[in-house]
Image (tube, rainbow, N blue to C red):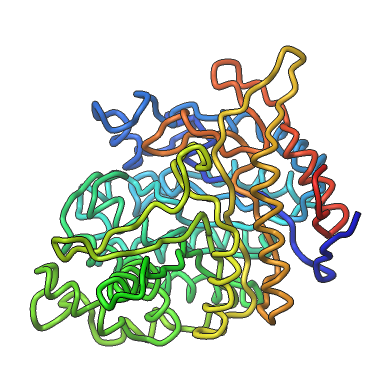
Length: 455
């Protein structure tokens, strides 16, 4: 059986986020987050749940590290809960919160696993939201101080730092369509939030580098390749719009110190910005945002095939029958990851690139013998790893892969209805059962290669 080998030193990991797995929402001085508030509002979460308990990782982290070690992971990407460290977002530091991350980092290192830390994965302190949240420039200032506090405490042991996870989701889902906390539906607010998140990335990167000069600092973007449904000029324009809205709005300021002119014009035409442009951008902001990145993290879940509808609005076209979609309703399209990587490398030349999230939701659970067979998830990861292998052969500097997710967790507005994990979790008993995909991933990690063909 042939294999697709990866370069020596390729980093294999799994990823999670604090609100999705930690639980212990009211313990040891942790402050309220926007997701605590949002999840308690009627109708916000599909199954009426919250992350108050989640996977109880706050108490079960030793068990979870043991699972990671059994999978031979080289790294674990996790996020710090800002409200656990600085409950009000600014001011007094909660030492008990920092102590938890001290224990977690030390436990990972003892197991031979590198901690790959994300400072922000969407759980903003509610106290900061009450003062304007990401729509306010003050939150960018607060985030830089939070980065300073955490990097001073953990910088002697944490090898790699991510400032933000998915600024598009923070701004669009949080402030434009309202699907995520804080549930705002206002496009101008979303654009201000997007800018302040990027600005806070730049300021936080400076703080981390002052405290840990040798540590790589990067950001994680969710990116989606966009293509036209037909060769009609209108459909090509819809694909251009999607690329500007989803990808270039974040890549261009990070790598070129500018926002894409066509995408800004689109927003002006829709009344989301004044004719003068972007009033929240101040002198020096773009230079701060565009300071050198040590790496780019890319989260990939699928592509967008676009057309212009009869009303002149861009819309995506379904490209797969329903029985071939994941439980999220997403198409499985590994070739899009290859194409995305080649394009990003060509246009922005980041080095290195990590695939910081990639995974699929399927509801497979334990059978009568307690085994969790999930062949579709194995096929998903295998196909995307093959796509990465091809991209590396084409000269793209991909240095690592993090499966999403280590555990079945709280999947934001979907609650516990969607299961992405390599490990099945009973959210009533907190029982963990590694799925067959976990065993397959372990074998892939050990081989540093993807086995072609079926298992």
